[in-house]
Amino acid sequence: MNPFETHEVFNQAPPFGDVNLFSIDPALQEALVREGAGWAFDELTALGERLGRFEVLDLARLANANGPRLAGFDRSGRRIDEVEFHPAWHALMDLMIGAGAHSSPWTDPRPGAQVARAAAYLLFGQVENGAQCPVTMTYASVPALRRAGSLGERWLPKILSLDYDPRSLPVGQKRGALIGMGMTEKQGGTDVRANTTRAVPMPPPEARARFGEEGEGAWQIVGHKWFFSAPQSDAHLILAQAKGDNDADSSGLSCFFVPRFLPDGERNAIRVQRLKDKLGNRSNASSEVEFCGAVGWLVGEVGRGIPTILEMGSHTRLDCVVGSAGIMRAALCHALHHARGRAAFGKPLAEQPLMQNVLADLALESEAATAFALRLARCFDQAGAPQQSLLGRILTPAGKYWICKRGPAFGAEAMEVMGGNGYVEDGPLARLYREFPVNSIWEGSGNVMCLDVLRALGKNPDAARAALQAELAPAAALDARFARYAEALERDLGSTDEAGARCLAERLVIAVQGACLLQHAPPFVAEAFIASRIEQDVGGAFGRLPAGLDVEAILARALAL
Figure 1 (cartoon, helix red, strand yellow):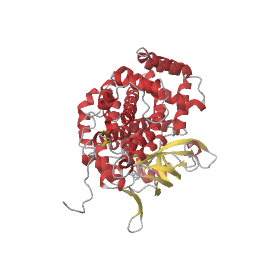
Figure 2: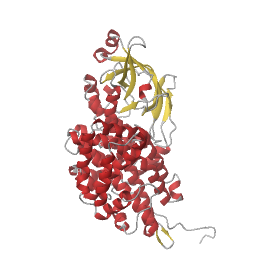
Figure 3: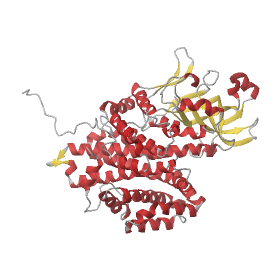
């Protein structure tokens, strides 16, 4: 024996990987079938096997450790405004685009298409989250571009393509295209009506001379964006004030489609000032830009930019919910896997009663988030039914508020399960923890979401109450505690003011989660959720489950290895 060998390494859990992320998640499998997308089961099984491989999971580490870099100029001094990425980023993008995470409900709009896509997106959320940003924006752009006439006809075949093509070229020379967004400015943030970016129509003779038929309806844009997401995208949807020949002639905030390359092959006048140095989402590029006479095309009506963007925003908000549920699931898997593989005080962590309470509480939160996310996706599938459309209008902002808001506390608790091993960058928990806040901030912060809930409820209070009653009534018939909770919630729907909007949004989500679990989850899951979320206040740290619950059954279900 080497006398200088100081110790043997033991009592360390092996890395988590080479697992089928779909097959080890009964809650996701059941929700997929329940919400109408059972036909995608085999496809998601194959995807879960692929995404759970060690080499795929490691792409997240590489992409985040080697983040994007702005190359503003070429070696001759010509402005190029390019963003360079590590090969791991491109591999992740290729996986998602190839799987149709940006397009499947639009290219194959069968019943359950949004649910199937949400389940796949939740699986991708367990791997890497920065690459989900451009995928989400591309997915969300399609409904608006389908109504954009010849512009949509030219671009949609490339947007819906399953080929990931990162080359910087005019869209006509590419196999596929991605879409980004640029909404906020320095002075306004959430208050986009304060935007100062100005768009004026190009004189038709000039536009036709430069771009031919594609020049019809071109506008010239001057201004800036403080957050310009994924500047490497082939085009962006932005908001700008539509103006005439002088500033007094204003038609209001409008939505414009601004490509990186113009129809004549020239780069558009979009100047990337810098990339944001962000807390998380570090694999993805976010930027500040200036429009120095950039050219764009109107999407929707002049002065109706916010309603046009809101349709896109509803789909991006859905992805915030699903993405947060995916990060929760990833953090839970890593924490529970660690607890099963590490012993303390004579037995595995996963068998210590207090640790079981914490882990089971996390497992309940994750399963409830998954159930809610796929239920919400069914609202999008059934948007043609008035009641489902209204329910989606209410639950989308409520879910974005509560599911995303629970994320950071969830991530911190999962990290604590792993102790110092969770806090260092060698493992995934630190990265996952940093990813949680962005979904709560992007596409409207918590207060914005809760005010949107009040607006949705206030537009037609009777119809809103009827939609929620129809959703909750079957579960209320199964449990008196839930019935009392639902009755109190319905009573308060029309009487909540702005100061109480957060509490109302929280209660709405918990009620829908409880209804899903009472009707469809195993009794030991439903009972634990009702006892810990309905009978008592949700506030406080995880690990507050009351005595008498079957925590071992909850944990066995949570990670079915």
